[in-house]
Image 1 (cartoon, rainbow, N blue to C red):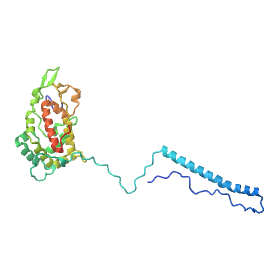
Image 2 (cartoon, rainbow, N blue to C red; image 1 turned 30 degrees about the vertical axis):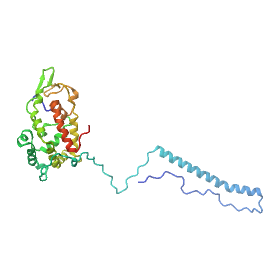
Image 3 (cartoon, helix red, strand yellow; image 1 turned 135 degrees about the vertical axis):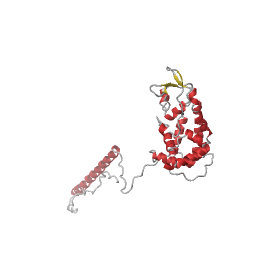
Image 4 (cartoon, rainbow, N blue to C red; image 1 turned 90 degrees about the horizontal axis):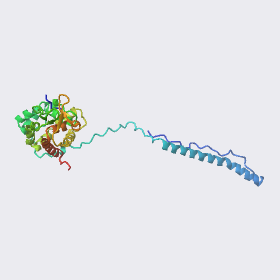
Length: 314
């Protein structure tokens, strides 16, 4: 209830086939088969084959052992990662995609022909003139704080889904008068009279043509995007944040019956911890009452439809 108060290539594993060792026996004197008996000839032939045979066996065992070691290493170790090739810079992280490009907006009104918007720091007079043409100079000065208007709009929209939305950056003048309650000390509720405090602002909201409002937003969008960057989001897209916040506000629950309040200190809070734990934006919609919240949600749906170029899925 804040805001209302009484006051490289990996090395190959061993393969076991480096330079082959010559396991053949040294040359022997040749037998004179014409003079040697047959059994001596057969013995000599076996002796000549034996070193070659054992050499082949040892070589086969070495290959089998090497292959077994290789497969064991592959099974027990993660595959090596090749280092980046020298001179090739690593790819930068991908920027988050834009979900709601401003080019998709379909305002149901033509934007007035105007010069390109000025720089953000010099935009207050031009923005004030554009808003006055939309709502009238008198209502604009009554309800809006025009100094730093674009920056304050961006900061407030970004804060609405958070726990607090500080009044010092609100682009609108706070609703006059104290919070109106009913009941006694033991049971305090938001009063119906409190809901009527917001009627002038709600009538002004409903009188603004949504198509003209969205057309103005599209024309001034570079200012909103710059303010969002300056707020600390150099790689984010403000229109995405706007739609995200609208969806968050539309998810505010409808609370039937009187809403109980508590006053643990100076400020009133919602007696229901689940309501008090909601965001600053959702608590504003709860505080203005269910009928008024329905009017605000209807306007938000219309804005969202024209800003995104498509209706909300049902």
